[in-house]
Image (cartoon, rainbow, N blue to C red; front, top):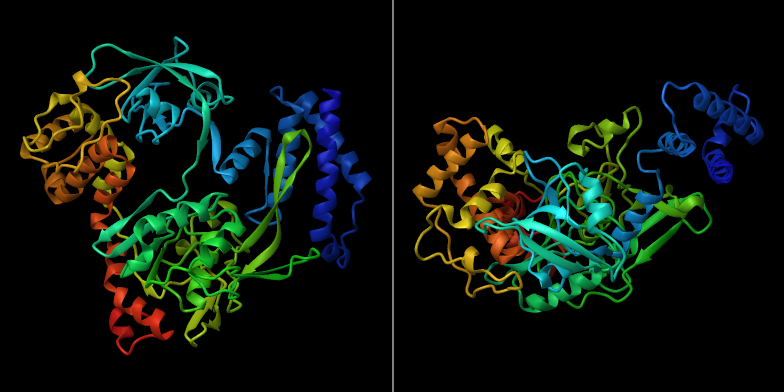
Length: 554
């Protein structure tokens, strides 16, 4: 314990030096006297001793010291943060785009403590896919022991995940199968997919979704573009909505796929030596087609770098909502005791010189993270100009060329989504308990399915949501004690049909097929298709067309 405490105190010493570099200068000019590091450490050690001896509950030194470090970093800005060893290990996994496990995505099963349900089909080639696990399977036992009393984190991080090459025995319940199924699965290195969807949303119009920016993102995107035949497309939608960002080098490589060689992608400015620099497109685009980029309030950091660069160079039309406004650069530091720290060391600026970061002064961290659309930008925003002279705004995220707010779900839609009603009803529907249209054939009848089968029929059949299915869905809602009126069903009938169909398609034909159903009512994608001619004009001429305002383009 003494050795462990010494390591933790060393962390405090290192961090107090860093914090002094940021706030010490301004404090020295005021009337408040500076506190030396020795005095700081003496006060800290005294407080730590008093808390450990007198606090109402026993508390570890780790918990106290980690909390102190987090508090120091929170006092700097909303994005400087500390990671304990477990958090830091997960961060590294996300950055490296891989982890060690069986390759399934699970969530707690509603109403059943401890049990988890597989919510997405296991990826092709993953251990879970090879052994025959499926979306909708409920995991009840691991290594023969019931998991009812385990927390979700214990199940995922301490039972399912583990070193590559080790084995785990899993028991599942499957809809339509009377007896539990047993699986012995060898853990392996699982790639984390960051570009999950790529398809033609209409003939000739490509669509690609980037979830976040990790080490594999640019390579994944190149493969998706090649699979779509991007040079032959009449247009491409690049969806960066709900993308929280990630690695800067990946944002630069993604922008490089669409910008001429040598164009500035982003600039950074900071206090450290070497932090003031411009990053340029190293190779230049090889795929030239009209481009529309979708952003929303949750698009942040590296996603904003890409959107800002493509907008400033008049390479793409930006459609959607104003982005989050996260333009602070974090450098990752590995600390002792396997902990880590993300410290803000610079700010991002778009090629036109716009500051991406929005004002966070005078607001709480919790309120700040609610999103840009819920906060004031703090007064007039800076005005810059794109390569063609169009006005663009800085200091508050990326403002779209075409504003198209996302449709907000109504009360009943939000209720069904929060209860995961469609996913759980789809498990009931595909178990054979409900009659479906005769022309819709599931891949295999559940009672005949082999646990090693990976069959998927081609072409994918159409599922008609019949009156019988809707009546059974209402019975399911009553059984779940989800209150509704008949008017709720009728007013949201299209939403309900899409929700059921999406989950059935996801379960049997994969995430992408389910996603195609989900976006059928996506107004921002519809707007992107509508302004495609303007994106083509912009790419060809570098300027807006005479009819741009009629399209809602600023």
